[in-house]
Length: 319
Image (cartoon, rainbow, N blue to C red; front, side, top):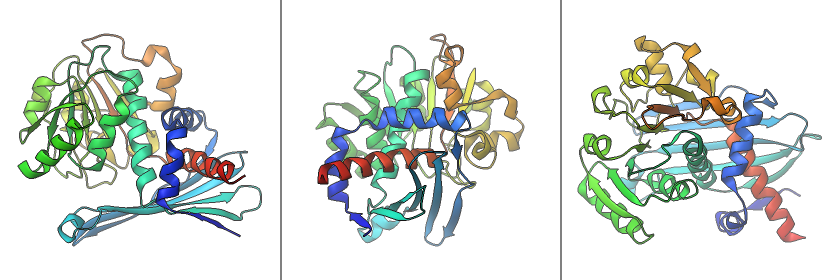
C-alpha cells in the first residue's frame, strides 16, 4: 500500500531534521555528477499569473527517486487562497514502485528553498552581517530570515514589499520571533543599509540596480525560477567579484544569470556552481569588500533530499 502523509504529519517530523546540511550535501552530489536530474517540466500561466514546476530525479545508486509537482499562483491572495500548492512522490529506485505521497502543499519546496539560502550564506555572506535585507514579504521572505539564523546572529532586518499592509503584517509576525524589522517601499533603502540581501519575489523587471549595490554586499537571488522573471539589473552580475549558480545548466535558461548572458554582461565561464564552491575554499568569500551573487533557480536535488529525509523520518516514527 502506498503511504500518504499530510502536511501536519510532515511538519511534525521536520524539527528533528537538518534540512540545511541535507541540502548542502545534495548540492555537492549534484556538482560531482552523482545525480540523474532531467530538465525542469514547466507550465507558465498569464491570466491569472502563475507557474507550475515538475522537478524529478535521483542520486544514482541510492534507494529512492523523487518527483515533485509544485505551483505558484501569485494572485490567489485575492481569493483568500494560498499562493502555493504541491506534492512530492517518493519511489523505489530498485523497483519503480510508488512508496509514498507527501501532500505537503508546497511547504517542503519553501523549506528546501530557505535551506538553500542558508547554505549560500554560509559560504558567501560577509563575516559580519550588519543588517539583512529581504525583498519580498511573503512566505519565502519569512522563511529565508528564519533559516539564516543558522549562519548569522544578525536580527536587524529591512524588508521591501508591495504595500504598507503587507509590510505591517510581516513586521508584526517577524518581530514576534525576535527580529527588529523596518519595512520599506523603496528597494534602494535595502541596498543602502544591508550587506546580506535576499530577493524572493516573482518580479519580471529588476528591483535592484547596479549603482545601488555597494562593496561588501552579498545577494542571494531566488525569485527568478522561470525565464520570464528577473529581480536584478544584469549589470550587477558584471560588477560582482563572484557569481554562483545552483545549477550551471539551468542558469543558462532561467534566472539572473540567463538575463545577464542575454545582455552580454557576463560569460558562462565566469560562473561557478554551488556544489563546487562548497568543496573549494578558494571560492568562498575571501574579503569584506567582495560583491558576491548567488542565483538560485531551484534544483531537483533539493526536492530529493528533503523528501527522502522526511519520508524516512515518518517511516521511523511508525515503527
